[in-house]
Length: 400
Image 1 (cartoon, rainbow, N blue to C red):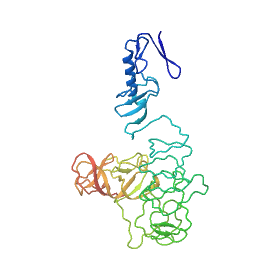
Image 2 (image 1 turned 90 degrees about the vertical axis):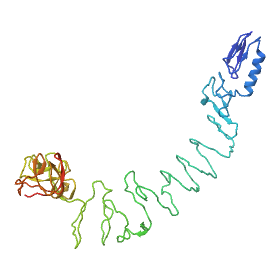
Image 3 (image 1 turned 60 degrees about the vertical axis):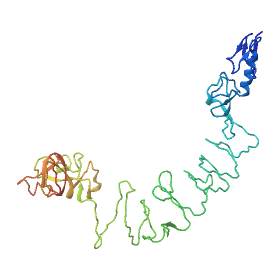
Image 4 (image 1 turned 30 degrees about the horizontal axis):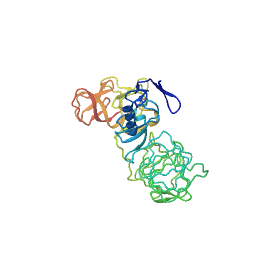
């Protein structure tokens, strides 16, 4: 009579015919009635069960709940489902050394849990987690945390600190030093992405360690860095002696209003060396292009050789730019009418030679007898030793 083998949950595992042994339904050999070698099979099954199928890979045909001792890692694992042969899918119970890892899918502890150390590789999730004393010796990543008591934190790296639902906000006590920020050490108070908010203080603001009273007078001693924005300071009633005024943090530079006068022995120094003015052009022109009055707009690239209509040279290094708001470099290029500027030339040029028009917006060196007071663009300040089209620095002086 065949044996019918039933699992713990009441389902039939297999039926074993008389005189046979089943080695495909489980990791053991299951002998049927009157199987001749049943004694050896039973002894082998006992040994395998006692050693928890100790091997470097999972046993064949495992059943849910079966144990396996992994000899590679010296860990005891549990089969999560019938016929699970992937070693990584088995659940780890313990390591023989006593200091390994134990893994479970989900564990619910309804009583008290005591442990010397709890390590979380990912997240600890809960409605409320109460810790009387917590020590973090390495790094801790906390997505959201509400600290209602007192916490002593040696170093805190965070992207946001908020007072929660407090209507009037919260208090920061003690003395704090700001390190880092947008540039050097700075404390930024922001409204969205636009820095329009301020810092409210009961008494004075402090700049560079000195008190600064906005309702008082301003001088170099109590206004240390930069005052930016259209309404930063309505008026300086006294003298200010800064060593540098820059608009490098403002796109497009800044604007000076009012009438200004240079005092005795005062002067303005410029990086570049040409005087230019914006004129409307009939096309965009590169720096160094020689232009004349005419075309469909105010200026166009010089057309004729030895032209007496030459008017100036397009510049992108003007030391002083007049009519600056007339347009941009494409519609109203800056034309140098005097000073040092790079000029497009063709052919060789000797330093000191006079430059005249070669046509097509390009200059060349004047030969003997060609230069007149009307067609000379300027004089070369450097040599050009090639015959191709290039640039040469020249002193431009256009005459009407």
